[in-house]
Image (cartoon, one colour):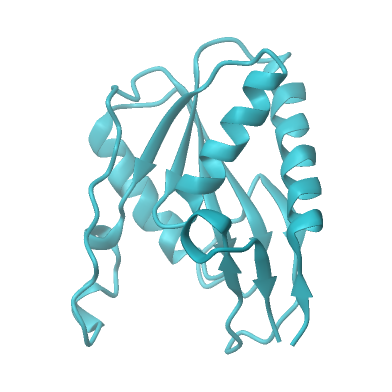
Amino acid sequence: MPTIGKDAIDAALDNWAERIAVGRSSQGGELALIGLISHGDILAQRLIQRLEARGIYARYGALDISLYRDDFDMKQSKPALRSSYLPFSTDGLHIILVDDVVQTGRTVRAALNALFEYGRPASVQLHCLTDRGGRELPISPDYSALRIDAPSTAKVTLHLQETDGCDEIIYP
């Protein structure tokens, strides 16, 4: 199976942070990066560190969308519920939702439903590490650091140092 390793992921995150920084120069207002649990939150933290190194401040949040999924009652096992961390209202903020892998768009739909429980943002963008195509809903990322073409039935797996001991993307 092909893999994308740590160096490529680091380079993708650096480019991603630069893209956010350039976008901030033309947009006023407060910025918040809200990562989707379980890997988007880690990616959001890494991006915030890179932004701070560039002199850009962004709030951090983590969103658990488990109960907002449209397949919640179809899953055979109960989802592992984790606590969202949004210690602020999203009213008037410019939000970047951070996800690890975007495919069908269903996770993002659930995230938008959950996000609006916390307020009414000025804007919401979707950024992801990996866009693998295969949409079922008309939702596409505003920015994706990497693009992987894989069959819709194939699993793309992201491992991160913080949870899995290494940084890599494995795909067929």
